Image (cartoon, rainbow, N blue to C red; front, side, top):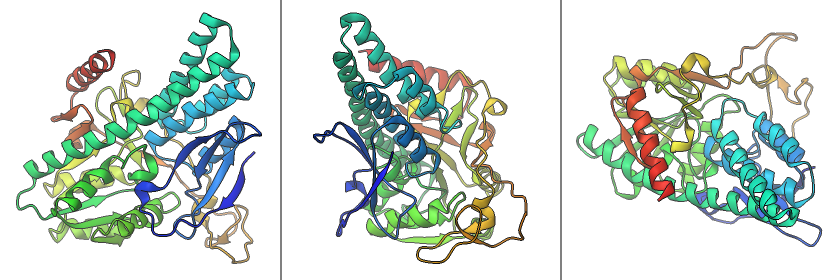
Length: 380
């Protein structure tokens, strides 16, 4: 299972923190994760020695974010293979850990396919395990490269849609280096704007579940020297009304074939606000997040989180009494509706930006063409 080791990281920027890495100590290979539930108070690493430990880390949101879940899932298959566990069983457990995030299953299946092909060819379990690890490392590298291309495409589109150059960007949840092999998705675009001197303000929604915007995006923005302001999710409407938002940039956990976007809960209301106030609503995600097998938004399974994440709060070094290990803030027995995601229909999305370019307007035909081009590039 997972062990914890506290690390002192000094003044390293978030982009240098090893969110996921493979190590091979004498006692056997392990997958090391930065525990995102402990940020920003401390940087603590989880050491996973088997797939169940990784499943636990995924479910608890110790590791999270669509692109990095795909990477972690691929490494999880490689870990199971290297340690002699049942690879198919490990793969199915990993795939089911976060049902909305399609990148997780993409990464798992890619490493599993590499393992199966090598095993069929050589009959050597060690060679098959090595092939799974190569697949995971390749996916890790490709995601970093995709992140850089998304940032460039996203900033070009932002400059085209928003005049003046002093962009005031509102973002939701966390989409930076903590969710990626590179510098992220939507956050990477804002970071690129900051480096180019074209970011006036980053508005950071606090974001349920587990306040991932307040804890993680603000953490990354602060350590990157960006001008940012944290706001309650409910305050976004007043910002739009005051004319303080030039564009909304979010990531995605699954994009259906028709262009419906599943992202952290609260994204859909932002899209409605953006449409009413004539503000671009831009989704930034790798091509692997587009799922042609999910026809529309109604077909996306939306993960439901435990109610205690709403009825309790957690704070370090404070006595806890709640069922979920936190301090109760609601009456005992209160029921909580706590979906992790909501779905935004394509007609509310100005553009979807991927490493292969931007799609606008968002249609099933345009997404299918983008995916086809991406496959051709990968094959060549």
